[in-house]
Length: 241
Image (cartoon, rainbow, N blue to C red):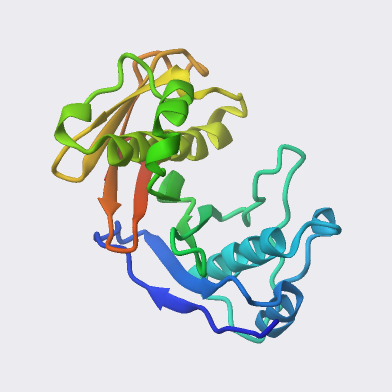
């Protein structure tokens, strides 16, 4: 397998000033171990024995985190994982990582958002390829709740993917604040045509995240067939996008 330098791309919306981002496209034929060596990403012991594609997407995500955190290229980088498999960010930072395979099959996408913990309590980012038509009904049954809204404004596969991605972002945003698992049916998402979405908790996660707690976020559908969602929670408890 050959090596391939990731191509940095831009998200299609403006991020809050406190949030830094790195998003890339990469070739799936890349040798993950060579890539980790060249970009100074310390391998994760838990990935020993994992297939090459899994190791590669993991290292690409860490590469994005390293770039978003403005670490120098020649500095070794290791973002460890806790027992619940969540990234262990530096004490002064919060962050979120996502990766997925493009529909073409020959490229992958990875991205990371990071922010100063003094400004943001949490940030979240997710990317998904639009769900294939033959899988939409099955995914919709697993992910969507009768309280989810906005389906009439979109193609079914696009709406279902946005809802799926938004709920992934909600989990990434709120789990670090409560350390309590919750599921797709525990939040209701409204997708709006203006590229925004709202999620409302249908359960209480803790005193600070009660039933009815609302998260506001952004979404986008690009010409590569990718859906992006993101959301942020400031230290004043305001959710905004």
